[in-house]
Length: 254
Image (cartoon, rainbow, N blue to C red; front, side, top):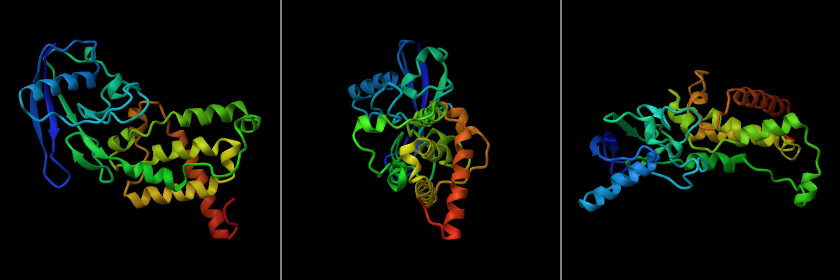
């Protein structure tokens, strides 16, 4: 199959970028989108031209680094699919495909389709962990966890931190990402001890990074490759309200 690619090219964050057209020929339908880009880059290198810079790692839908906006949709038009899982058979022969990076102020451009998402790392560093002693693995596993709580934690833990929620939101909100991380740990007995401090610190870090506010448009949920729902944002808002109440009442955090 043949395609026309319109790819965003930008040397670095301090220079303007532009869309550059590439003609792609003889692509196998069973290739993934990233494999297609690999072929394009191999041809560019053979011609002595600069390849397209893009991120990838596991290519199994786990790491979350394949951050591309394809035809205006983060990760492309297939539901619950990362770019590395998106196959070329889902495109039409001769189609024009636009490829752009995540666009949000906290995600600063590095080169072409690569952006700096270390803002997510700093949010995790602010509270996305459990510091209390839970003993050895067998001791931790001996703590009874109700099935509904275990399933909630697992659903939230499915978040791979790709940033599609931010890229799709008109406000560049990171609420779905933060809510997933807060809910994952806060649902488990080991994480409840620091629940108030965690949500307080992570929301504070999110705001400091410059992410926008949530206005409940649901665009984040619609593009999440792991199906994280808005229910987790509601849960985080309740936890954050309780943390504010405790802080203002002088009760302090757990």
